[in-house]
Length: 105
Length: 105
DNA sequence: TCAATTAGTCAGAAAAACATGACCACCCTG
DNA sequence: CAGGGTGGTCATGTTTTTCTGACTAATTGA
Image (cartoon, rainbow over all chains, first blue to last red; front, side, top):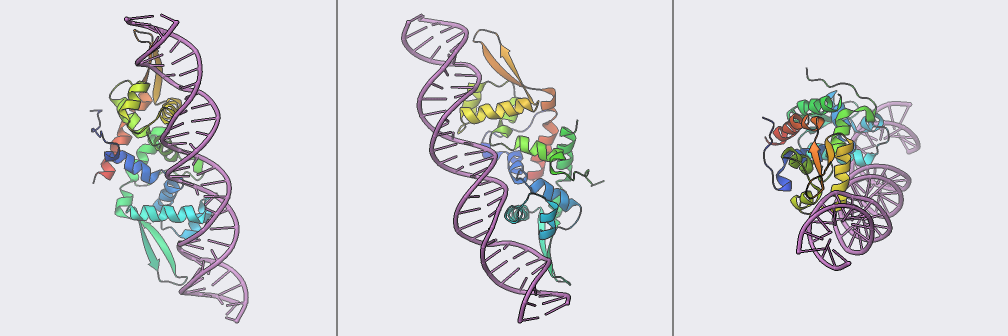
């Protein structure tokens, strides 16, 4: 079957909601980097050339609020903060694979 | 395997490009309607309450340029234009299914 | 104690996306 | 030939997103 569900009302379309969440300028890259291991704020800034504190901070907060990232305070030598992908975050992997496969033809 | 490919340069990430393409305010709905059959400009406007000519025209043009929609002049009774999903366009179906499945839990 | 690194916040400016209303050209019907 | 329907464009304005630079506050090392 090639049909999708019917979502007449604009806001009841789940695909739209997820697209909104992921469509920020830096969020896909942040997600991708998160797949490789824990993120740290300043490191992330350096890994995203052209980005800025403000935007990255907002992106992290929104990804956290969406339950894709978890913020943890690491009480070690240079006391810092880590952002890790949650279980829900890892569930996005197949979605990304699909996104990649599509445009890669 | 849970790993994704490496896309160090921001612009070489296909997922990002596709997200950009689909993330417009009206594009997901337009895509969804296109799944149900050929689109016509004025009809589409009426089907998308709150939209406007300008935005819909831009969305159609971008989806066409991306190769998801094909514009055809129908030389019949009330000479008009149709937008149809291309083969590439239909290939997006599984992506949308994934997007929906994810946010639906 | 001074300076650097940690992870941010805030106000304001710039840029991008989206909306509004006027206008246009073609076709068709009466 | 007037009026409505076709499918738009264009200039402008508003709204949303993103960026910039200044600032903060706690921790750490010299």
